[in-house]
Image (cartoon, rainbow, N blue to C red; front, side, top):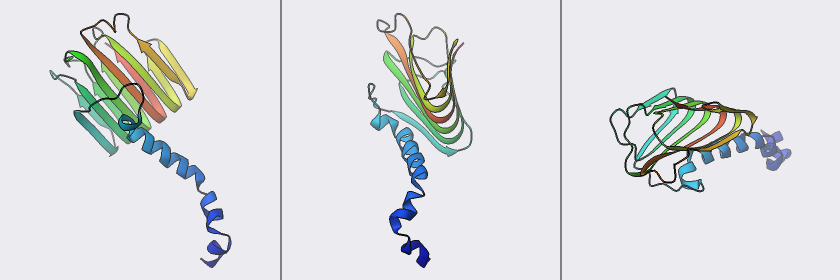
Length: 165
């Protein structure tokens, strides 16, 4: 233990800088609704979990403004039977390590913003992969629609998918 302090505390901490970056990335993703830009949302429902798989189904329920976060695992959000509230609805989903899949009815006018550090992002036929992939999409008529859905996905390592049914 004396060798640790002989080498200097900064020398010891320098060896762990990658862990510091990972921790910072996880913090940013888990608190994206507070840090995010462009769409600040009053979140009325939050689904946060550390480990495991999470399945969220909004069966005959108004979407409004929802957020779902998962540290490690797979997150699936099924909006097949969901109802859009008047105005802009939003789903913010983030994951550190794992996959996120959002299933959306084809009649919903949507705007998608998705990004991750390493992985695959897919929306319909659009697919980006590798390091820092990003997909931005806005349906035609989104801006004029009375009810619409904004989907924001973010991740560190994994796959992010938005699938219209």
